[in-house]
Length: 448
Image 1 (cartoon, rainbow, N blue to C red):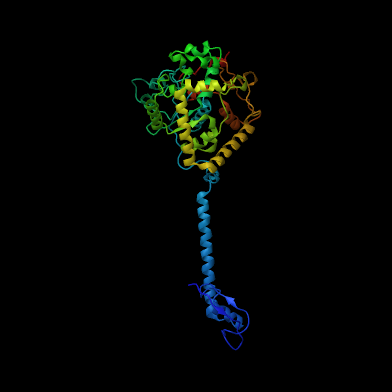
Image 2: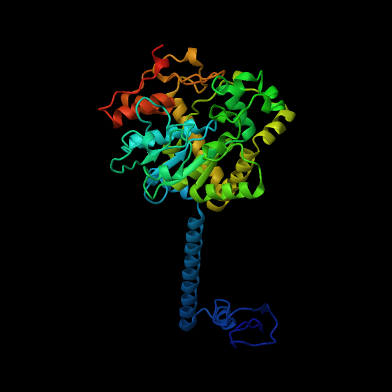
C-alpha cells in the first residue's frame, strides 16, 4: 500500500521523535521497501544496523533485480520475434523456412521479362537434377500459338504411360487439362505480366516480321491509329492484340464485358498462386523466393533477352491511350494482378522487410556482376566474343548479351555461363542432358 509520513531527525535519546527541529522527509512507497521510514530512522539514529531490516532490504533488492532481468529478457525476446528473418538466414545459406518447392509450372508470357525467369528456373532444375518438360524433337516451344497438348512435351507418348515433370516453363498457350497430364498435383503455378502499353511496343519490334498486322503497318503509332486496317483474327496475329490474355488460353478478340472479364480473372486467380509484375521485377523475385522457399542465389539473375535502347520506341501519350483501348483485356488483367501482387507483398513482407530483401538481392547481383562479367553493361551481338552466348535476334530488335571475365576457375565459370546463357542455348543444353539418346537440338543462327 502507498502511504506518506512526516518524520523529523532523531537524536540519540529517541527513536522517532516527531516535532523536533531538523530535516523532514516525505515518503511515498511501500512500507517494507528500501525507503521505509523505520529503516531510514534506524540508519539516521544509530550506527548499528538492525539485522531484520537489512535482511528485508536485501530481499527486496534481489526481487527488484530479478524482475528487472526478467523484463529485459522478455523485451529482448519480443524484439527478436520482430527482427527481419533475413538477418538470421545467412546461417542457413539464405534459405527461407521449409523444404524448397520443386514442382513448378511457369506460364511464360511474351515480352514480360519471362526469359530471365526461365533462366532462373533452368538453373535451379540443373542444379538440383530436376526434370523439365521440354519441347519435343526440334521444336523450341510447346506448340505455340496453338493450345498446349501434352504430346508437345518430349518423352510423353499419346497412348503411353503418364509421365510427370518437375518444371514446365517454355512458351505455351495455357490449357489446364493438358498441363495437368504432365505436372504433379502439388505443382505451384505462377506467371508474370507487364504493362500492356510497353508489352505491345516490345512485341511490335520483336515480332515485326512474324505478325502480318505488324508487317503491314509503317509504325506502331500508325497501327494503333487504325488497327483494323492491318489486323485480322488469324493465329499469326496473336502477338498483335491482348497477347498476355491469349497466352492464358483466352480469346484476345472477346468483347470487353464486365461479367466476362471478372469470370476470366477469377479463373486465373484460382489456378495461379502467384502473378508477378515485370515493372517490379526485383520485388517480384523477393516474393517468388518466399513462396518457393529458395535460397537468395537461386533467384539472383542478369537481365536476358532484352533490347538495346536504340530499338525501343517511345509512344506518344495519345498512342499510349490507344494501346490501352486496343489491348483492353490485357489492361484489365494487368491492373487486377498489379493490385493483388502488392496486396500479397504487404501481407507477407511489409515495407521494411521488402526494402531489406530487395537491397540484399541487388547487392548480391552486383557482387555476381563483378565476379562474372567483363563489365555490367550488356553487349550487342557484334560485341559478344563467345558465339555460344550470343542471343537470338528477332524482328527489328537488337537483343543484347554479355561477355564473361577471363581467367575464371572452372566452377565459377560454369556458374557464370549458366547465368548469362540465352534461352535457346540453355534449352538445348538441358535437352541433351535429359535425353542423351535423342539427337541434339539444332540452333541454326549459331552455325551461320
